[in-house]
Image (cartoon, rainbow, N blue to C red; front, side, top):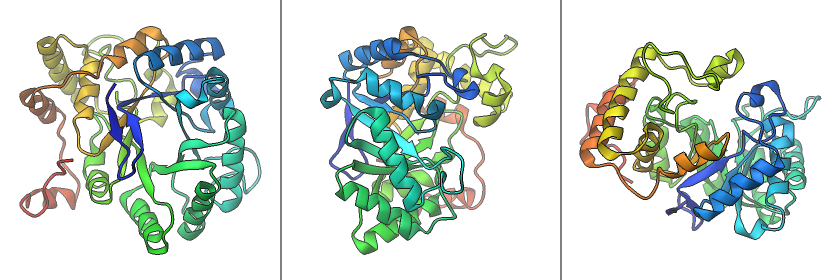
Length: 344
């Protein structure tokens, strides 16, 4: 397994991270992702560790805390072998204070996650979304206190826009507080919006991308083809899950899948392995969060590392997946001499 620096920190993370949204299946939404119990989760973690994948990502809202509980039980007795990444911000309970990134809710969220995970520290803690109702000063200050208390090692965000992230970084920098080094972000061959603003920001401010849904919400598994029915187990068959994820035009999807098929034939790899490997070569990417309902899916995704696409193959996938940029990004792209694409 390849290990990479997480943003500008000294913390090294594996190129692939296992997401635990498939653990538990405790709600209607997450049941569509998977429902691994402790035994199956432990087995998947065994396989990950055998391959050098030692980072596991969760969130308090995954099955209302059940995913964190299962992860905690599955790593019991081997906490020193694993890295834990989790998230908080979204609603966890009734009442006006059980949501957001206020001091009250963040401290409560971290304490509850620690209990469910059965540990006394979290390696990477990320805000699951931006809270416009709480001052940035309160949010950043609270997280800095939690880091100084030894309950969190590194900080990150998720689903922030560029100005959300930059405002927070500027405040932390001005007052010498702990800065975000990770941005858990959606990025895939069929979802390249990250490149417009967040990638240049990440390169400039040394914030590493922790990529969620790198297979485009299950669309790049190699099972979706023109004029063919979706597989029975696809989350896209369920209205709730399909509506919550990124929306993709079918013709655009199939154009990208055609290019993936060509490259897969050239490399002898599978479609998802090619799609994941393309992401691993993109600037600022620190780790990809892969999901797996079972051992077969996990082993296939693990095959995305240990090799690289050629320059021509990357260019072919770039061309097939490129879409017109919104303003002001299309304008900036016309002046590449002064606004070059990030290279690292």
